[in-house]
Every structure is written in structure tokens, then in C-alpha cells.
Image 1 (cartoon, helix red, strand yellow):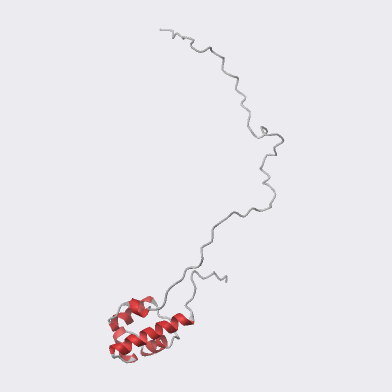
Image 2 (image 1 turned 30 degrees about the vertical axis):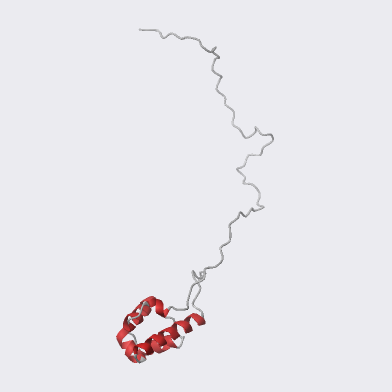
Length: 136
């Protein structure tokens, strides 16, 4: 099995701990036990404890359930947590040292690769010459 590179950085311990502290503070302010909060949020009673201790990162739906049960905005749970995007670098070209394609035409002179026109040249007519069209 091949492993793909992650598309985003996994949450660090600090993120999990900070979210847990924010949750515990909001729960205590609401005057609820972990078990009461779990019941109101529709979660297992051990889930709230795992999140508050920073042992588990909640999914977005779990965070929404918790904030709804506590009647606080989700932003309050994310207080002090911010994503910092990686630095942006400018692009560039990589030039390989591979041999030219076998289909390439070697150029012995600048005009060697230009296809030659084999049609005969049109007759030269002086400027201002009048033409008559025969009528039937």
C-alpha cells in the first residue's frame, strides 16, 4: 500500500489541549458536569473528558454539538487557536540535461528547418495595370 502525503498538518498537542481548556471553561461557566454536557450534546459521557484533557480532537460536528449544548459560539471553543499557512515560495523552471527528442530535426543552418515552398511564383504585374473581364 502506498502512503500519500497528508493534505494538512495534523493537530498538535497544544491545539488539542487548548481546545480542551476552552471547553472546560465554557462547561464550568454553564454550571454543567461532563456527563450533563455529554447528554445535552448527544455524546458518550467519556468523550467530553477525553476532549477536555486534550486526548482527543473533536470533529467539526462534535464541536458544533458541544457549542450548541453550551449555547456559546464555536469561536469561543477555538479561542487562542489559529492556523498559520506555510510560507509561499515563487515558482521557477527546472531544466533537464536530457538529450533532445529523436524527432528533432538537426539544424545545419538557420533556414534548414524552414519548409521550402515548391509552387511557382505568380507572374509580376506592374502596379496600376487595368484588367478587363470578358463578357459572355
